[in-house]
Length: 335
Length: 275
View 1 (cartoon, one colour):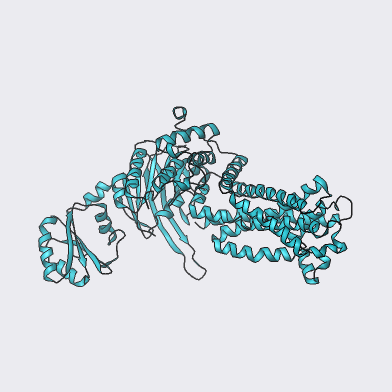
View 2 (view 1 turned 30 degrees about the vertical axis):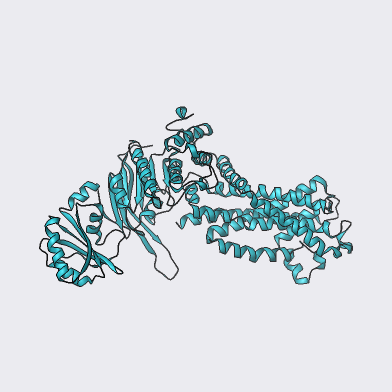
């Protein structure tokens, strides 16, 4: 396998889906290009429908791009899909192991299907059972495991043939906080292996912030911004200011915020009877009191107000114009 | 064991036969863990033999049914009905796999698509052969005899296997296309009853209305039933059956089975293209 500083090289990926004969095709990816350094953890972030899963499906050879090229672990995903498949592990959304097979049977099957010999398959299964703390469940059918244990089995099965690139598609969605923390520990442990590149698709910004060496935010099938979490946050000078709102009138909130000097990047979001005001300031604590006073004077009902250092949520808000997973803004950035 | 396990196992592209074997093994283990399904499906032919055998027993006095009466005529038909009904459900496994995410795993592995189809088909055929053996046993207990001997029984099993291949593959192709359990069940129910009653499963062609005879002649269910019946009652071997016609019907079943298999492989590729 050719050595390359990049485990993944995607160039101008476009994916269009036909939804009907009379309706125009849906463009899920609009010329997405990016590279993933070998041995790194790459976070692919975006809301539902942003194009994350489509990107993952193309890179794992499950789907064909409409145009553009991609190389994974040195092989082209279209022209040399078979080679890509031997070099990747893939944990899909939901579960990906057979519910009727036991833990050991699932691991051995995954190994054999990927070309590992019988003896090696048994050995690798045993090794992964130990590494992923699955020993006490080894003879239980996967369908009878708890959510967190089943997810550990999914990841172990994806690693059984020692792939060079591991795709984790929303690996902690649906897990309770304890299982999620355990899965983060596993991903961190895997990230310590120099030879393994991990592509982590998630819609938990905190997850990407904690685990990824580099993140790329996608929205509407296109790259919004890419960089290390630290650099992206550092680019947002100052603090984030957030105020919870009750039955807000967006115009009134915006006018109140505009009266506060040094407050910038104001975004007001309304979702039913509640909403939020997000903004940035060089010194968040200095603008909080005037902002509260301005809202109060304008007759805006509000709840908790907070000031925090920049997070990936702020990065997302800054670049996309609305909070991650939140309502779309009634007003864009102002001031 | 763990200490000896390789950190980087040697990867060799598995042969098509090995891939098929692994897929087959997976399905067989799953079947064994849910053995109540195939076990319950064995009750159905028992009920059919008892029910149809009793309801139509008076027909047994007609000369056309020979020494065994109606039960001897009915058993080959029930044999084919069993594999037809069983085969029509084969696609549900794919719908489960698509829903559970297992299909994505199979498609992202270096696996031949035809190995995925063949592995599942073989599991279905093994179950069908076991069901067929049970049907023939129950038929014998109910009074049917098989003058065609072992050769005749084997011929009936081959015919049943070909018919099962046709319907298992067709069901799988529909499942991969619709990806919808309700649509598959609806379509199966729409097909299996006409396929059964517009054939010589229950009645000889001479007792059927002209238009039903015309349809039955081109119904693969008739082909399989006639082939199985000629084997079991020995008429294929004593020269009293129309061997030329049976040969053509057998060839027709082989052709349909091949086409249905190709349709399933094409459907699994179409499914992947739609992702």
